[in-house]
Image 1 (cartoon, rainbow, N blue to C red):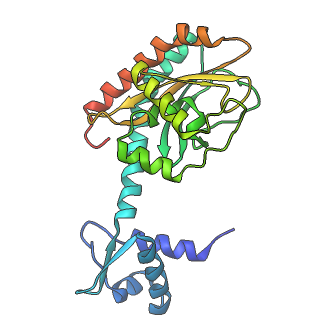
Image 2: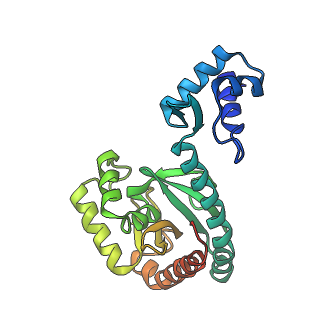
Length: 254
């Protein structure tokens, strides 16, 4: 179903360019061939949401920080995915395993890349899939290396609901878990999201020593014990994360 109001908002945002960073209500109306009243409602909404900013002196509009942040996040995610893919593919081929890449968005992880070798249980994950961060190996790997302020913000907004009987739903227990992850350099999900599924993850760290994403290897609990998971895959996933971290180190802005 086509949503006219959404289309109008996107059209307004799209006409701001490098040459025309500021536009008046009249200029926006003329360029889009839309009534001034209609444009006024759209710009009011976009300004209220932070996607536009109004200069009270000139009465002109410009793109707000919220739009710029979304743009940079998208570009960085695309470039990160491109940089990570060859390393992920090489490990997947070497070990004949599934390898995933995800980043943190508020209280959830978002899958950026997924090299699937086989279906594990009845879980249909794909690029764009979202899962709670606190009960996933990639989520915990990222949380462990967030700046204190960012982690506090996360705790203020997250609701730790049990997904399985193994989910960590106590904030102090979660903090202890993350401290262990920082010491080891990798995180484990021991059936905290789905009974029958384990995974091991390591964070991708930028030049500021902050985790911007993570990679993981999922396995079936019936086939790989907790001890085997660490002994067999810990070094591989940590090495993979380090290679990707090194690759992004030379790319400004990621």
